Amino acid sequence: MKNKVTILSRLRPVAALVLGGVLLASVAACGQTKDDVDQAVAPLLARITALEQDLAEATQAGGGLSGESIQTRRLEIVDDTGAARIVLSTEGQRPSVALADGAGQIRAWLFLRDDGTPNLILINRPRFILMDHNGEIRALHSLNGTGAPVLSHVDAQGEVRATLRLDADGNATIDLFDATGVESFTAP
Image (spheres, rainbow, N blue to C red):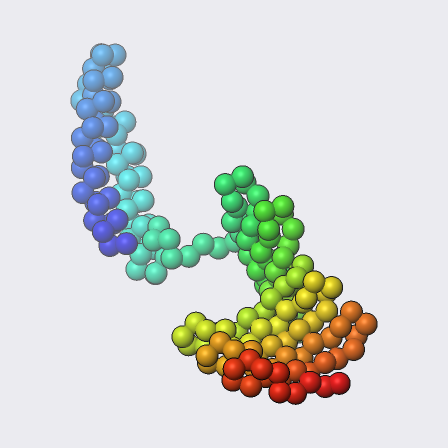
């Protein structure tokens, strides 16, 4: 930000010189004097000085033109077609982030309820993945093709070691696997 203030300070005399020259040529063409030009330029120079001061004060306060802060209640990030793909919002006093697919359908929504409880909603065959510090999947909660939930736990070698799933009728099954991926226990 300091560089922007410095650049503006250095451009001020150049801008004043160019502006003064243009005005002087214009006024001279109309038969005006140098005093007329000075009088016409003075308010513009005062405005440039005021803008520089405002910018310097904003910089000292941590704001200004630095791009560090944008304040709004809703921000939409669009794709190349102009469709909103990410929506950040505080509408209704509920902060939220919504992610939409290419057709504009919301597929993920993170928001706080009125009581401050966080909620994450994933839509249309969602997957919730937990990874370790190496970026390896360690747990996966998803919905299968029928919409039934499946919870899988994976060891450090990438082998599924346990699953808990429901079938389409709501019947639960637990499967445990050894380190080689061979089923060692199933219930029921």
